[in-house]
Image (cartoon, rainbow, N blue to C red):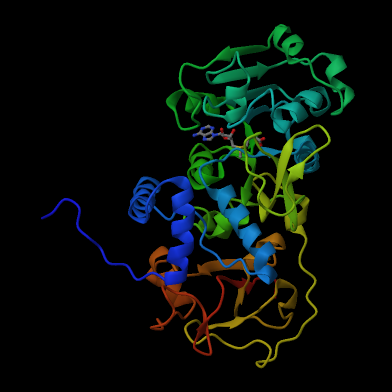
Length: 412
Ligand SMILES: C[S@@+](CC[C@H](N)C(=O)[O-])C[C@H]1O[C@@H](n2cnc3c(N)ncnc32)[C@H](O)[C@@H]1O
């Protein structure tokens, strides 16, 4: 077989001419450019740029999609704003008394989590604060001295640190207080390393914004080690087979302080500000905005105890039945009929309003429903495979719906 076979590709002539002009400028020919593209595809394991329509009318949608995808990829260098941390943590104030809080996947010099717990250490009556920093974190790299992974442990905070979030905190003063220290870790600070798992064992409550690309692994580990936690994640994570059962079984729920909109995150200086809503703040720090962010927690929150006020009444025209599930379609959570006692399919955003004494979650009807659920569960919701349901998506009039959570009232 020849080493370099010739391949015929149909290319639009006009596109070919335009591309050739660009290649000429760069000094490569079409064949080298195609070969370079193929090499990058092999190296990246996929198309190395987003494939999406960017007509004028769809531009903002396209930008947000790109951004959300970027948020989920392995870059993972997004830093939470102080006010977002504060808004959620104050709701749990009495749950921190005497506790060891661990902020792993963090950086004491940059993290709003560490800053919040230092400023509020005395007010919350914290027992100990631990923060570990991954050696590959871009902020740790940018701070000359601390190129390795390191750990900060705080057991005592001087009164002058109680002042509030605006002033600069002299962390070197803090680390020199008796009982506190900052030291290098032996390994790279990976939350899965045996060294970090030993630190995790010492923690009561874990609070951080973990790398989104490792979110499933991260939350599974917290559950495995029986930890309490309040962590930031993207609501898309709910549809994963590791995460959805945690919501279904009331082992995890959303925190109260974020239930819509987007959130600002700081990014490293070399991060491209391509999407809408990105910018550089007055202090010169780059930020992006991300949609679908939620707090994932297993600490009690007042919000999840409040039942939804239901006003609509059931009628078969407005709430049609699926052809492959024994359930009706409810397009919006607020439309859940007050008088329907059977199974209902609701959007994923239902979880923002979910009250466990009002509804039972049965399963997630999406493209993985058949593989992720036992036959018993599928039978209990009357699932009958439809040749077009692509793995178990709810079908209405021969068309697939979006992913639906199947729920039933329990407070009849
Ligand atoms: C989304 S950022 C959040 C940083 C910080 N917790 C915050 O909220 O501002 C995730 C952080 O996890 C770090 N990270 C990535 N992979 C990691 C791993 N395997 N173990 C520990 N940390 C990791 C990244 O370097 C990054 O600093």
